[in-house]
Length: 298
Length: 310
Image (tube, rainbow over all chains, first blue to last red; front, side):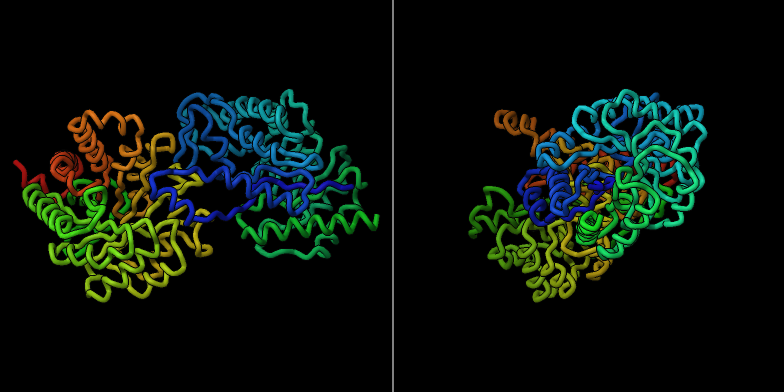
């Protein structure tokens, strides 16, 4: 069966009245745990095979950057000293999520890539963007090691690769994966037509891209020989509207014209954080339904 | 000490000025009335004590130049009428209405509308516990001003608190609106931002760090009730039992941190502590104003402790 997965973030809605009540009675209750639980429960209800923790603790840059010594969070991360890994960012949540999963469901740990962190930071310490990116990569490699103890897959997100690809990208990403034993995934959103030839050279097991919003990506893919599994975006993450299972199945069938089912995974184009929670759930549910119908036909 | 590039709005509620550049206007204090065991039963003796507390706060306010208002804490909707009447009879100053329960806040608004006093009301607060009925009540009986509380239990960093103001952080009963949008939607034109004090272990320092950040980002008057951080400190709770005087010093010191961080108002705790808090805040205000005048050329307002206290 072709696995379904998510790319990362998932929207949640919490009851403000409940948390206000706790606050005014003198207890400041951290709502992050409920956010993670809600995101996981919704992904499980939708029937997704490989889920994430929902990245509900904050923006995908902040979650990681604020955990490094040498970085202060303002509007953006500001690097004021040498970067030093100060301990796991997400492994604690992943451990909790692991305890919520039935055996059939796998867990994906997600790391925001060093190039994206470097491009999103104000650099007041390192001499170059490259030097900063590799400093982040050193720390993220330790994060990957921590995640490797808990999750079944590890994904690195590098959205900037589609708009500003660095010539040292491969070395950088592979540094993060270091000695990771779990299958390695690389997610680059946007239009990767120009860099796809570079990305297939990476030592990763799966490449995940935005095929729903950029169907012309298939033109780039068909001309390139590669060995990785392809994570095909089959629902749009930039559209706050649920696509029908039929429409999604059409995208899946297109994928099957290009690759054997053993080399495919289906996922949303990107994280779903900016969508209404009901819409995000509907997209995942229809994605799973479309995959199931497709499987029966195959 | 700070001066902001962003233009700072001065909010005027019945002649009481909140905000501006640090040093320009004194910090406005809110003393909470009807909170604690002295007001467990709201009998004549309690009401008489309440009136004396209001008068004492106002006397000290006149003496120091630190503006001080009553924050009417309403535990129960049955108390709305008596509490509000006492304040209306005792002072001509604006005041805030403060309850943890949205329904009680809405009932208080309705009563104040009937009493023709909405132009003196600072609603404390529009917060994540907002309900649809409360939104309706605010639209129908719109107060002169409102405190908007930035507390965000999903993310207690400054960014997270700002997110509550701008987007609601996925926790509000109204879709796609932040708390600042809600204030605008119901017609509240005068907004005070409360950074939402949190206890130790819950990014407490962000309560103060958010003050200059919010002023720079939103240009609005900003304050907090940092006293709550002190109150929630478990060590202090035990220690103060045998050291009440020293606790009072800590309370005064904690409140005076707010103007040093460029805060414009403080909900400082029980009104009965004004005698210790107000002089400490007057000191901080004078210090900040002197620095602002000397270094940034800020024009310090008339009646400010800077001018008033030799």
